[in-house]
Each structure stands twice: as C-alpha cells, then as structure tokens.
Length: 480
Image (cartoon, rainbow, N blue to C red; front, side):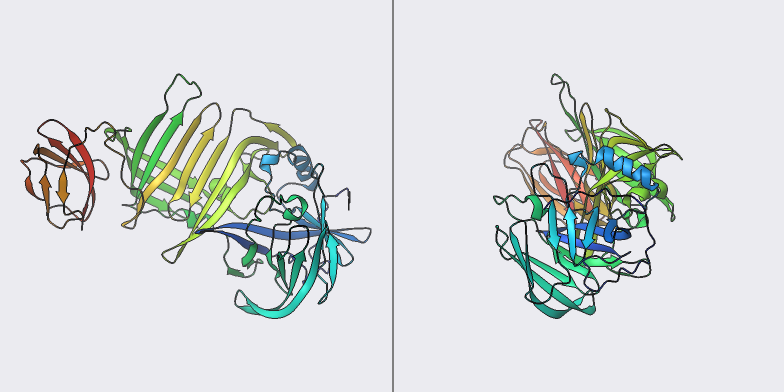
C-alpha cells in the first residue's frame, strides 16, 4: 500500500480532541522506552506534540514544535533527511490517522513504505499489513508505572513475524512494541532488536518513572575527585606513528549552579610508557546554554547548537543508555556534531567538510569522551575515575611498556596493611612509590626484605622496583 501525502508544517492547538482511549501515543506526553541489551538499556523517547487535520485526515507530528518556524524546519528536513547516517530509524516523525487505522509511512527505495496498525480493534479482530497478520488476542488489566490500566495485546503471525507482540494501554499508549521500521524492511536473516518497553513519562505536570537527566545531573564533581584519561592520536599520514598519552585530572575546586559549572584541576600528563611528562593547573567550564541545550530531551532526529541569533550548528543524538550499578542508575549520552550548519534567519543550510566531532557524557563523571574524525583520528576517553573516594574503571596509568621483566619477583601481601615483603633472586635494590597523581612519595634503597609502609594513607599506589641488574618493573599496590 503506497500513500503519498504533502505534509504541511502547520502547528495546530493541542486541544483538538485527540483523547487517549487506546491511541498508541498520548498528546503532549514525552514517553520513555527502553531496549534492554545485556547489562545496559538503550533509551528512546517519543513526544507527540501536534496534530494537523487535512480533509478529515489527521496527521500526528512528533517534536514538531521547535525554535524553528515551520517552513525552516521543513527546509532542513528536505535537505538532510536523505543523509542515511543522520537518521535514527527508531524515531517516528509522524503518523497518519485514517478512520480506525494508524499508518506509519516511510520512503525507502524498493521497499514497502507503509505499515498499518489498528488501535481500536476488538478482541479477535484481525488485519493484514505487509504480509503480516495482526490479531487482537487478549484483553486485560495490568499495573503500569504504579497505576492500573486496561491493556490490549496484539499478536503477529506470518512472514517471519510469528509471536511478535504489541501491548497497548488505554491511558498511556504503547507499553511494549517493536520499532515500527522493522515492519517495513526487516531482514529475515537477522534477529529482531529488543522490544521498546515503557519505563517513564513526563507530561509537563508530572514525571513518572525514568526521565532523561537534566544538565545538573551530569556535572557534580567536587574537590578531590579524579578522572583518568587516555588521549589517542592516529595521523592520516601512514609514515607517522600513532601516539597515546595519559592524563590524571584531580579536581582542586568546583563552582556549580543551575546554569554553569566550573572546575579547576591539576593535570598530570604521562607518556605511553608511564613516565610523567608534565604537571600543570587548568580549568574548564560547562554551560546549560551549550552542553545543556544538547543534553536535554530530544525526540526528533536533530537539534541545534545555538551559536548566535542566526547561525547554528546542527547536532544529533547517537545514543542514550542507562545501567544499574550498585542500585544507582547511571545514564550515558552521546551526541555528534557532523559539520552541518543552519542559518535560522533565512533557513539556509550548509556543510563544513573538515569538521566531525562526537562527545559523550555520564551522570557519574560528566564528560567522558571527545572524538574528532576529520583528516585524522583524535580521541580523549575516560578510562577510570575516583568519585567520593570510590574507584571506577581503570585507575592505573599503564606502565612497563619499556620494562625488562624481573624474573620470579614476589611482592606480598597485596593489598597490604602496614608492611610488604619483597623478594627477587637478583635482589631488589631500589623501590620508588608514586601516588595516582604521579607524585613521588617514597624512594628507598633496599636489599630484598620487608618494607614498612605504615605511613601511607589508604588507597592505590604505583611502585617502581629496580633490581641489581637494572631491570625494572612497575606494579600497583593497594593500601587497606
């Protein structure tokens, strides 16, 4: 079934009588869905915010109300929507409502482009779309985010879709469904993706369950917190070698309010063989009007990073995930700046061909990734952290790449309380102990034997041991 409509971007009032009562999406409700992948869940959200009526046909728009005027939004979509790598296929731009049917329409070359769903179907009602038979197989009542509601269950059969289900509630819309694009061009040689399952919603008055974190949820480091980074550069010139360096940033002060965050920090830089190359003091800031603009709720396939009253850079969300770690929900967000420009004054759009950046964030550490992919690759990746005294990830600066291993070395116990025993057939003659900031805190000549480290505070340390043949080994020590 092919349906071609010219969609006019006219925003009508939200009060046009679109009651819930079995509609898959609730007007002006931002609905959050998860797709569960092993230990993490990907999040998609859908906001039906506008309905347009043309000759009795309702067109349901998602995220149509924006800072752009309707004509400008339309121009941007027409210029960019065919760039495949920009599109998130799970997102829904619009649905068409004709009588008792909802139509999901796409324009995929040489593929079916329309999927039909009937939310008002009664028990045992059935219809066929794209060779798939869909039947309303069960009615019931269930608890949805703490509230009881009536539900309908629709079951698919045929064309490789046997057993696929839709769960539709009377007051909250879909509570479980497969991404609608899967019914247009799914490859029977691959598995279906996880279901989208309702985990939260916000309607401007109340928020229930999971909702996307706000700006201040991402930035809350304090004095003493530490971040461990790997900086990797891979030149486009094959005659040049790639370079890896490491940084340990120790927060010395922080200033946080609702609109901005400022961190002062001491950075210790390490070469890829673990030697300190530089120590300096730095500062950085994050602004709600900048990062906050890109981390807020986005249900469309693009947003604008506002640089001025006229020209803005386009960005889009690559991913939003969360994990449950020690009873805490940690959200990870990542957006991409692909070098697309928009002039809001005249709806002009253009490209910056030598610009491509990806930025990632976590609600535990703040910014955790920054990657530039233009003529070469350069990435800054958080590999570990120490937040409120608790270590996460890898807090060990890689060392020993240039080591000559000391045979049969024994250092015990590790973790230790006050003393460690050191033994090597060639005798350990020197030990140097560094804290995780790279500061040398102990240097002692020894001849194997027992070393008193009772003066060290609880935490992690790096020990450099040298034997009588000038062989060296680096290892991590943990003081309990």
